[in-house]
Amino acid sequence: MQVNLMDFWPRIWEATYQTLLMVGISLAAATLIGLPLGIILVVTRQGGLLENKTLFRAFSSVVNFFRSIPFIILLVAILPFTRLIVGSSIGTAAAVVPLVIFSAPYIARLVESSLLEVKPGVIEAAEAMGATPWQIIRRVYIPEALSSIVLNLTIATIGLVGASAMAGFVGGGGLGDLAISYGYQRFETDIMIATVLLLVLIVQITQTIGNFTSKKIRRQ
Amino acid sequence: MIQFEQVSKVYQHNGSDLRAVDQVDLTVHKGEIFGVIGFSGAGKSTLIRLVNLLERPTEGRVLVNGEDLTQLSKPDLRQVRKRIGMIFQHFNLLESKTVHHNVAFPLSLSGTPKKEIDQRVAEILEFVGLSDKAKQYPEELSGGQKQRVGIARALATSPEILLCDEATSALDPETTKSILKLLRKVRDEYGITILMITHEMNVVREVCDRIAVMESGRVIEKGSIFDLFSNPQHPTTQNFVRTVMENDIPASILDGIEKRGSARNIYRVTFVDESAGEPVLSQVAKKFDVEVNVLFGQITELQGVPFGHLVVELQGPDQEILRVINHIQQRVSVQEVTSHAG
Ligand SMILES: Nc1ncnc2c1ncn2[C@@H]1O[C@H](COP(=O)(O)OP(=O)(O)OP(=O)(O)O)[C@@H](O)[C@H]1O
Ligand SMILES: [Mg+2]
Image 1 (cartoon, rainbow over the protein chains, first blue to last red):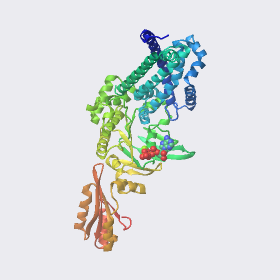
Image 2 (cartoon, chains in turn purple, cyan):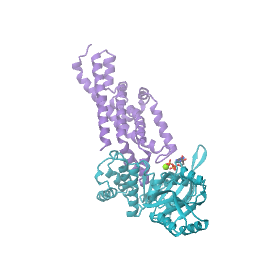
Image 3 (cartoon, each protein chain N blue to C red):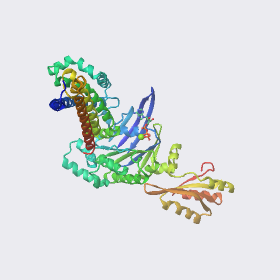
Image 4 (cartoon, each protein chain N blue to C red):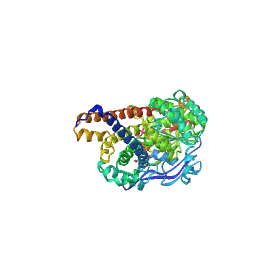
């Protein structure tokens, strides 16, 4: 059965919406977890603001652990946990849970590397002025690294778009799922091309927005 | 104001101890500009960072206003740090903030009301001569301007002490001069005690009242700027003095003297203030039966006052020469020059 691309647009729009929803929610949740995690990794490290070897090692190991599991395995492995959180192990919401667990540690590392770009001398100057560790985090580390953090979050977002293509395995829907189930498995070449083009477009727009915002932030 | 009492800072380095600061005793008085000079790795940065406890002493005590900061709780230490400004070689400004917000930063840390901050920032930017740059970002400023922002930021909280870690080392000679002039103004107008470290002799020459020379963590010599320039004891100090003032008699002149075979009666006359040098010698020529032959001389400036030495040859009867020496020693310092030392 040949599906007409024109008749198929509503499905494509729905899939686009699902992709954006999955990526958007996952990104928000993963940043909420990854940002503080990244900060902890920076301040607890040796020579850090709140140096704490044990804490640093613990967090770093956890991050490494999750970072080393391929997404497709993570997706299946945590199904029981997903069910516990969202009440179901299939659907768009169910796809968000592994996406968050997948990208939060990644974001933590990206944030960590952004924060480490802040010159130690600047941190030291703030310490010499009598700033509290919290003031240094909030008013030196974050604003000074924000432009770089935004660029790194853009990278994480694009990674999420890619990972969300695998969400089809848990019935998450989305463009990637559409491309695989119609385009690839049923040889609907034009649908595959259309969805892939849309994915390309989303990545392009994301990167453009990211670049623009990052530049803008450097000079509020 | 700042007292170092037998202070040492020891780092563990590949299992062995590295004494970055070694049993230092120093006192910096209120309102003075004190310089610490030393070559790279001498321990200068470590020493200055012990004052505001960016580094903790391993042994000994550092007292600021008679208070041992290591005894303070963290919040109390932060309060004290607000009264100790610091500027850095690489400025360490917040790149994401304007000049205004950089200077406002230390004030906003203590929750100063915005109106008060704006007023203080405007005042202090005026003082450092950057009123027109308030809205610009550090990136858009020259090195000298960045250091002015650094100074303004350090002064914002009206500190009693200003610590300068190689504050001019990244600047060209002209800019260095203008920054040093500003630091002097900081001391003169606000009475702030300044402790500065540097590896450049011309910097301490320009502004310091007293200096200490550091080598391998130890203070090897200290004293007033005049003492150290006119009579440096330690070879390292002599090397530093030589970087801004040629002490050696040029070889060509020495050769000439040796040829004439009269290396005996050569003296180095060191004087402060131009009025002391040449007039003394011209008087000598009139009053005594000796001939004064100036072989070599150099004049430099210490804190805006001429400082120099003349190497002279005295020709005449030995008896008369002794009388001359006794006479001029009351006004200037005189040392006999032996042919090898120069
Ligand atoms: N955190 C540290 N850990 C280990 N060794 C250190 C540390 N900080 C400084 N040192 C060592 O202490 C010695 C003195 O260093 P310091 O930075 O005080 O020298 P300095 O006189 O400021 O030199 P420079 O002119 O190059 O800045 C050096 O040998 C340095 O390697
Ligand atoms: Mg140094």
